[in-house]
Image (cartoon, rainbow, N blue to C red):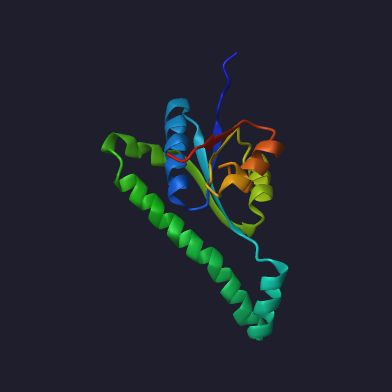
Length: 161
C-alpha cells in the first residue's frame, strides 16, 4: 500500500539551509497534494539569561514586552522570507503557497516543540534542514538529531547543498 501524506511539518531556524529544505517540503506537498505546516521555534532563554534580564530590566511589563519581541521579530522575518521565496519561484509553482495551512512561531525548546506540533497537526512527515556545526554534531544539528531519534513519523533531514 502506498503511503498517504496529508500533512507536512516544515521546521525552520530561518537560516539559508532551512530555506533550501523548504523547497523539498513544497515539492513534496505539490506532488502529494498535502498541506504544509510551518514551524519556527525561538529557543527559550537559559536560566542565566533570564536572571540577567531580571537584574537589568526591573519593570515586569517592560521585561515581558522585550521577551515577547523576540517572537514578534521572528514572525516578521519568517513572513518576509516566505514572500521572497514565492517571489523567486516560477508563476506555475506559486500555487503551492495555497497549501500552507498554518504558520507557527513560538518560544520553546525546539526538538520538543517540533515533536509536539507534529502530533497536534496530525503530520505524516517532518522536513528539517541539517545544520553544519562542526564534527561534534556530525554535520547534523542537535535539534535534527533529537527529532530523528524521538519522532514516531518519518523525518526528512535535508543536507546542506
